[in-house]
Length: 162
Image (cartoon, rainbow, N blue to C red; front, top):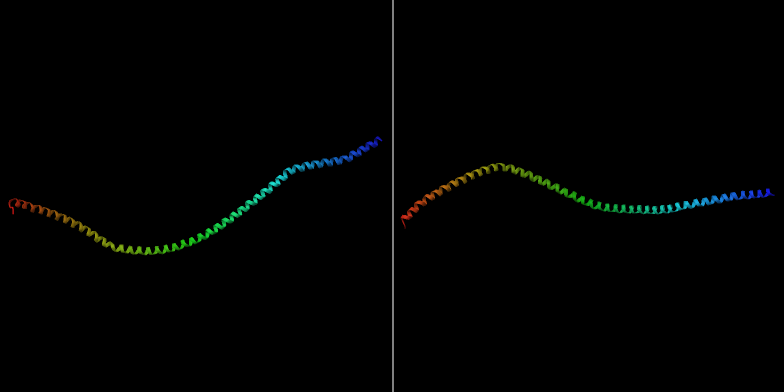
């Protein structure tokens, strides 16, 4: 009987031991799962928030690039029309410079014909200088003559009152 009780006790212990081990394993797994839930769920939530923010940033960047492309396109159209105007003005300027070049060639030829005249004008300048000098000498001579004529007249006026 003692043996029976011992066997029964061993049988019960043997039956409880696997159940107890499974309970312990289940509790350890649940504890580990709770720890992982404390890490994984907030991390998953943070990842979803960051993914949404990343999508928003990419969407904003795409919108800004689209706006930039439209702006550059419209500015390029205006620039192209202005460049056409600049090209036309350059054509007119080139034509005007060709005309000016022709006029400068004519002026150069005319200046070439003026060189003998310049020599003649130089000799005229020298002749005018000598004429001025002769006129100065004549003025001095007339002044002396005037002075000599006026002295006897004064002398005569004093003696002859009429």
